[in-house]
Length: 84
Length: 266
Image 1: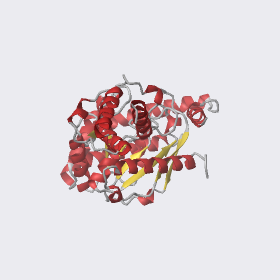
Image 2: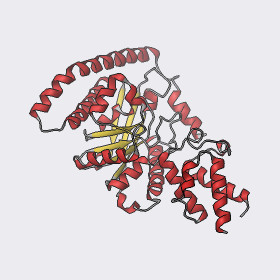
Image 3: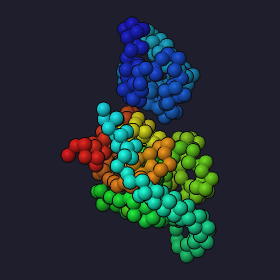
Image 4: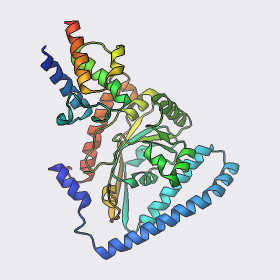
């Protein structure tokens, strides 16, 4: 899976789950201020990403530091590389 | 195209007769102001008397007064607004439920007086608590500030309401819809229903966006419909992604019901 494939799968999964406009989903977009997610959504986001990539990340400390969509891309891609 | 149609539906005033609009706005706003002032003045005495002579808790009593206030509002709007209840007999009085409802107008909350139950704890964002003429009542009624509280607090307050046989109402969209269409649903209400194990009842409201859409001040005659969908047993959704499945199911059901109410499908 290339980095671009990972980004595409993340964006598609989050767009579907949270009914986000793909045009707003730039790497710089803040998941709270720009994409309108709330604290409960971040828990849902983890569930969605675990389902999409078939891994477990809910115990990862690094998730708490995520602020932008780019942070999610980097975090998930690192996990995919680590697991492959 | 659908959004355009619905936007047109809610803002089109070409069919309205201006003398009627003027009369309606003078009547409704002046009586609403009077009714609200009377309520504020009479409430402390009525509340004290009821507290002394009934066995209801203070917060439950306040919620009953708010329901009565809503009933009064319905009465004064009645010359210009037709209220239609559909399938509300599915709601058993005295049984705890978590309601979720679509959001079209400031007056949606007033329309909850159409419900057969008066013990309704509203779960709202922080801004309604900033309306100084209502905030005291909201706090006394122990309404839930879902934005200003932690999730654990919200859940604990929901549990308290259910244990006392009350109901809790969430607006899963969080904001009023600008085009009448359902917006994105947030998960809070669905998670709360599953965590507390109470049935979830989807409510669909239509017509309040014609009465007073967001960003407008002019009231217009309309018919308001409130429909209850069958209660959903939330025990079947007790898994990690259960609230996501429940949220999708409810949104789908509400979308179909709203289309039926609006005559878009049979």
